[in-house]
Length: 114
Image (cartoon, rainbow, N blue to C red; front, side):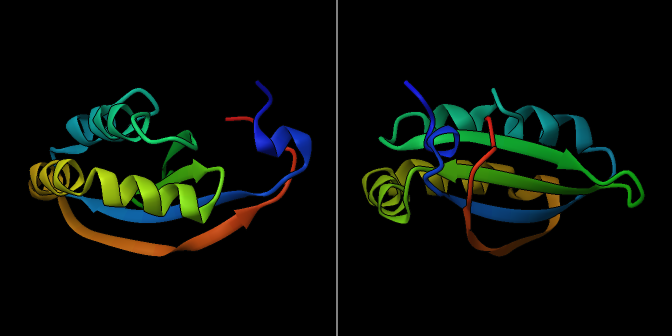
């Protein structure tokens, strides 16, 4: 099945910034990677497309995650259905980070393959 981005339809993307505690980088990368714990949870939701993890090359411990969904409605439906699981995993990840900021929700148009 073609991804929406490949067909020219925009994807809904949430961009998060994390400041990871020193010494927790490896564990953080395992949990937030494209095959990590968050992705395993997201895949339970209809309309999940993929996740990207980016590590800042200049600022140690700074990461961005980009979570792609076919629409905002698909993401919100996932959140409603899996609220307990989402909160539990979020709580499990809290000790790894000093700061977590939702930078925003965006529409991503064309050319992206995740």
